[in-house]
Length: 114
Length: 113
Image 1 (cartoon, each protein chain N blue to C red):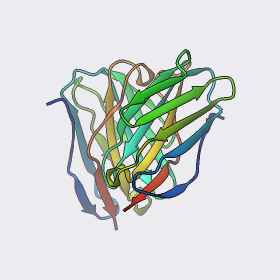
Image 2: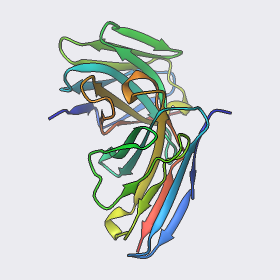
Image 3: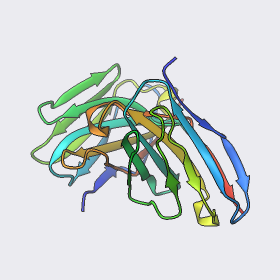
Image 4: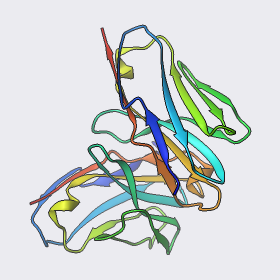
């Protein structure tokens, strides 16, 4: 089944404790992206990757890191999480550029930073 | 600045009725416009994708229209069902930045029996 998977689905952590949210897709998509969704703000793009070893900042990249060492994986790293990073996070992938094809979203990771 | 504005913010309708959601954008140069449906707590799912040359696209009971001249799109839902209760998000991409898309804040639709 074609899908985007994220782990963990739920995470509660404390301020400053490094964490990684994994994202994997099995559709051989070049493009992958991370979004956060907060009440009343809609989806905001954090980082995106056009292909392996190619990443770029979205609209709200502060406090996040990403890497794209393999085509299928695009982990989101929070080196020192803070309470304002409490949010619902979505990973998405699409063939080639985001505007050339439908984006497939993962199920989401709900992160709480205390 | 590229923007996407959706209206109304929320909408309540009775089961079986039709409704229309609006999306206005300032994204330029335009590449495509997508409508997504997002159930509470789940990832968005694509409904339609329209490019500059398309002005209508249907997906079952969902019909999207696009007027690239006025930079407006609408999503029409016919014969609504309880399962249509969700947030509907309009997303617009510019052809000059392949990696970024501009998301609207969404319209929350509630269908009541």
